[in-house]
Every structure is written in C-alpha cells, then in structure tokens.
View (cartoon, rainbow, N blue to C red):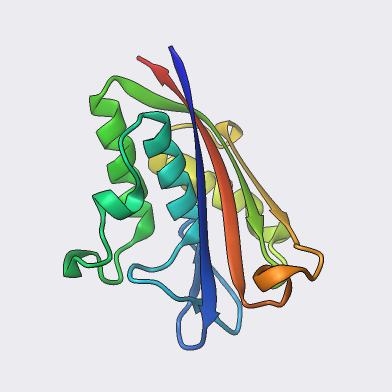
Length: 158
C-alpha cells in the first residue's frame, strides 16, 4: 500500500530569532515567528507525513496552546510524527519539498537540508528532495515578509 500526503506551512519574518529551516540555521537578518522554533520546512513535512497516514496535523499533535512546545525543536516534532505513523505500519518512502522565499537565497543550503531531514527520518538523502523558488515579487513572500513551504510525502506499508 502506498499513501501520499501534502503539507503546507508559512511563517512571517521577525527580528531577534535565528532562521531555522530543516534544522539548519541559515544566516539571515531575521528568523521566523512561531511558538516552536518556527521551522516551516519541518512543519510542512510533518503535516505531509501525518496527512498521508490520516493522522491529523501538526497543530493537533503539538498545539501552540501547550507550553511544552514553546521553542520546541521542530525536527524532533517531525521525528515524533514519523514514529507515530510507523506505529500504524507506515514508513516514509520519499519526500519532495519546495521552499518559497525571496530572501535569503537558499541554493547552497539545500543539500544540507535534505541530509538533515533524511537523517532524522532514517532514509537516505536521495529519498528527500528540497528545492527553493522565489515568488517573483508577488504576495507576502514576494514582499519579503516571510517564507512558505509545500511538502509531499509518500509512505508505504512495512
């Protein structure tokens, strides 16, 4: 059995926080606002994995109303969600992510992001694709107000 899930996340930029994407700290003047570390890449992939397993979403599993998740490491949340779907007999087979951001330019960080995600999920970096695009100056992303991420996860029964 093969199951596919789609995840999406977006966060606005704020001063005074590091920019963390896929567990990698990216040099930039601003970080992302959020209850946890606001890692939009990890959040989108978490939702894609949970969606493929029909296991809810990141907000249900790790609500921002719960102080336990304040400043939480989103890569840990991702690993926890993957372990949850593994208890249902499913495991990640492949993931494809697109980060949408005008700044900073992310090309030189993409391989490290794929490796970090793969390592946390127990797959090879060849099983995780991370790409970056701009929004051509349109919308909140195009105005440089934040970052958006789209993720697709394919799970298979063990």
